[in-house]
Figure 1 (cartoon, rainbow over the protein chains, first blue to last red):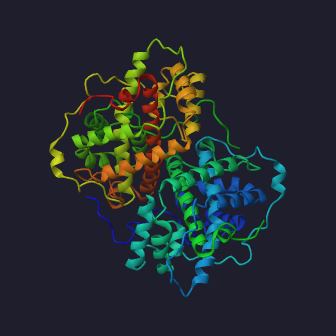
Figure 2: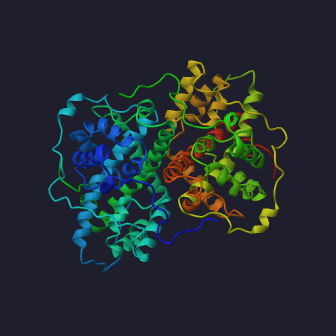
Figure 3: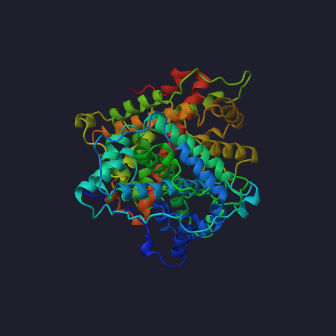
Length: 294
Length: 294
C-alpha cells in the first residue's frame, strides 16, 4: 500500500549547496557566478549524487555558458515562454506586505530559469548522443560577460517542504501534482516564503493553464528552440555517453540520463510558470526582461 | 569533445532477459505471461539495474494488470493513439518478401505497447507520490484473464544496434534522434529485422509527423487518459517513495524516478508510432485491434 506522507515524503536525494565539498562545491559556486544567478538548480543538486558527473559536465560547459550568445538565447526563451491569450489577472484586492520581495524573487527566477533550461538541454542532448555546441562562430566566445549577479539580484531562500507548516506543505503538494512532477521545484520552494501569494498564484494564474493544450504547445516550442540554440553554442557543452563513462559507472550514466530527461521537462514548466506569475503582477514586458544585461 | 560512435555507442545499462536470474528472471517471465506479450519492455530491463525495484514493483502490479479492466484500458489507448487526419500511405510499389512477418510483429507490438504504457504510468505516478489503483470496483479483480499470449502471437527478435550492419545502425540512430530519445526502443529494434520496411516507415510514415504539434497533442491525450485509467485500477499498483526505499537505496530511488519519467514518454512515442505503421499497411481498424481478446 502506498502511503502519502503529510509533507513531501522522503527528501529526493540531492547534495545541498551547504553540504557540498571540494570539486562539487567549486562547481556550484562557479555555476552561479558564470550564469549570474542566485541558486543552484534542483537538477544539478540531484545529479550531484551520481559520481563526478556535475563537476565534469560543468567544466566543459562553463566557457560557452558565460557568453553574450547564451544571454541572448535566454532572453529569447523568456519571450517564447509567454502563453497565448490575455495576461493573467490576480483576484481584485490581493495584497501582500512584501510584494516587493515577491517581485524581486520572480525577477531572479525568471532570469535564471531560461539559463538553466539551456544548460539542462545541452547536457540532455549530449548524454543522449547528440553532440551540441562548437558549430557556431567561435568569435562568440570572446564576448564573455563578467561573472557574478547583475546589480539588484536578490538572495533566494528555499523553503524545506519537510519542515514547512502544513498549509505550505499542502500548497507544494498541489504544485507537484498539477504538473505531474516528483517534487516542488526550487521556484515554488522560493514562492513558499509567501504562502498567500503562492495560493493565489495557483488558483488564479496557474491552475487554469497548466497541462492544457496551449501550455503543452508552449513547452514544445520552448524545447525545440532551446535545442536549436544549444546546438549553436560557440563551443561544445555537456558529456556524451563515452565521456560520462570516464567519470561515472554504467548505472550512474543510466541514472543521469533519466534525471536529465525528467528535469528538462521540470525546468520547462518552471520557466513558463514563473513568467506567468510575473506577468500577472507586472505585465509581459517586466516578466520577460527581468534584468537589462543585454 | 563528444565523439559519436558509429553504431549506438555504449550499450544503455540493462539486464537482458537471457541474463536475468532469480527473482528478476521470474518477474520478467511472469510479466510477459500476465500481460500476454512476447517481450520485456526496455524500461524494465533498465530499471532492473537498480536494486530490487522491478521484482517488488511487479509483485504489487501483477494482479490488477491481469484483469479484463486492464485489457479494456489498453484497447481504448490504442484508439487514442491514432493521429488526426488521413491514414498514412507508403510509397507505391513497396513490397517485402516477409510482409506477413512485419504485420505479425506490428500486431504484437501494438498489443503490448498500450499495456506497457499503463504499467509505466502506474509506476511513474506511484514513485512521484501519487498512489494509483484501489479506488475502482474490486469486483474487477475477479475478471482475470488467462495468462500467456493470445493465439497467433509471434515471437519477437530484437536486433542489437551494436552488432547490426552500418545501414541498420544509421536507421536506428535516425529513429533515436528524431524522437529526442537516448536509444532505439524495442519496437524499432524489432522492425530493424526488415531494414527496407524500417526505412520506408521512417521516410513516409513517421518523419512527416513525429514531434509535430498534432503528435504532441496526441501524446498528451494518451498520457492524460492513461493516468486516469491507472488511478481506476481495481487494486494498488507501483511503489511509492517510502515503499521503494525498502528495496532500493536513496540514490537508486532517484535513478528509478528519472528513468520512469524518461521511459513513460518513450513508450508514448512507440505506441503512437507502431499504430501508425500498422495503419499504413492495413488501415486504422487493424492497427487498433491487434488481437480480439475482448
